[in-house]
Length: 178
Ligand code: GDP
Ligand code: MG
Image (cartoon, rainbow, N blue to C red; front, side):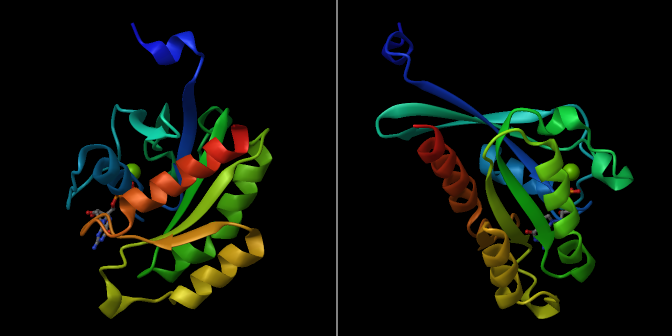
């Protein structure tokens, strides 16, 4: 018997990952949930979300993290994808400026579809590609500040800040609801 059930102290939070195609959304999730990286990843097939547990204040917190099945390619992420989300990672690729320029559109879409307070983090992924960087850290920070988002640069390839980014969002949601 799980004592946390008895006490009603169990949390399940939906988190969505959004951003342009090929910024590394699926690899961020596979790095976080399974510690895997796929250098030749194709459009996600099948798995809609992964569930990860962590303990906060002695309570079990489960994050159900959703990945697009490649719909972002056709600007066809549905409202069902956003429904019930308490957290969001807005991802761009630091080596492709256009993916950064798309962030305001993703923010608008998130606002349109969300019905509650959403813990949001701006994620500049592929920070291992420093030699071909086209968005500075300062630009990322400044956009995050002006929109009230957390900010972090990550690399799904070398694991930099991946756990930290997801866990910051999960902890923020926990703080919002508890
Ligand atoms: P998605 O379309 O946003 O889900 O992006 P994917 O996760 O499928 O990644 C797109 C491509 O970028 C793949 O070739 C990945 O191997 C590569 N990729 C993803 N994350 C990183 C990263 O942190 N660094 C580098 N160098 N490549 C990455
Ligand atoms: Mg994907």
